[in-house]
Length: 219
Image (tube, rainbow, N blue to C red; front, top):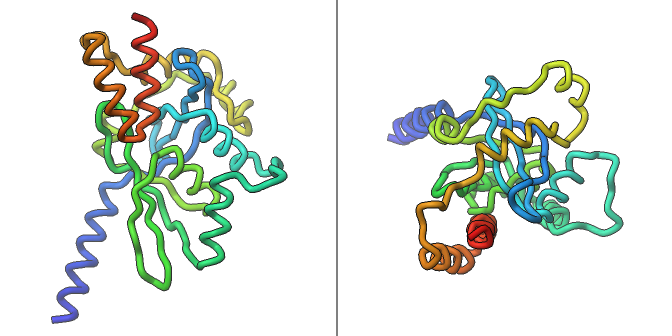
C-alpha cells in the first residue's frame, strides 16, 4: 500500500515537472511607458522566447544587485534580510514557479524546504525572482503561460554577444518589449479604471495599479 502511494506521488511529480519550462534572466530595462517601472526579461532556457514582466524600481534594484556580484550594499536589503533569516533557521528556497497569469499580472510561488518538509509560499513575481537569485534557485513557469505571454525579440546576435555580461537591455529591444507588455485598458471607462485601481491597491497588486494609473493619466 505504501509502495503504491510512493509510486503515484512519483508519477504525479514527473507529470508536474514535464509541464514546467526553466527560465533565466536576460536583462532589465527601464520602462518608457510607466514612470518608475522596469521591465524584467526572462529567457526560455531551451528556446528563444522571452517573458517580459513589469516590476517596480526597488525590486529592479534588488535584482540588479544580486546579478552584479561585485556590488555589495553596506546594509542588507529586504531580500538580503530574508535570505539571512532563512539561513539562520535552515530554510531553503528550492525553486520559484511563475504559476498563473491573470489580466497581465504574473503570480508566483516559492517552493521552500525545512527539515525535509516542503512548503509553498505565495509571492509577488519580482520578490520571488530577487530571492531565487540569492538562493541560487531555478526559475520555472508553465508551458501554457509561456505560450500565452512569451514573445520573440529581434536581437542583433553580434550586439547580444558583446553585451552578454550586461544586465541592461538594448534600446531597440526595449521599444519592442514595451509594445509587447503594455496592457491595453482602452476599452475601459474612467469609472471602470478607477474601480480597477482601487481593487489593485486593496489587493496590494502595485504593479497592476501602476499600469492603470498611467492609463488614467493619459486620459
